[in-house]
Image (tube, rainbow, N blue to C red):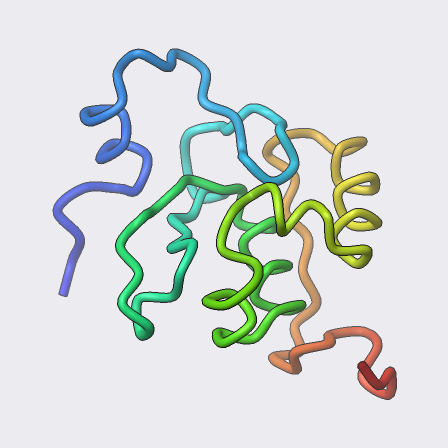
Length: 119
């Protein structure tokens, strides 16, 4: 089923006071287009309704690091997500990149390139 609006258009209409929105995770500006995703702070499957715009790479990293139950219980805000050591390393790396930067391994595995790494 096609979307009525792109994620960015929907938030522009409801949040017009922010001219240049920033990603709440990495705090880089959000470009319009394919590199922006909507993120439910508490997963939809767990009843979450609060949504924020994130860079796609930040959104994927959140779901790569945390399970839905962890997101629901402990990591349900940008502040708590930024405090996690894995996310701190990721954020310090991604802040050096262009806001439209998008790179992700083809693997669908939760840990991507570090397949043998145990958590």
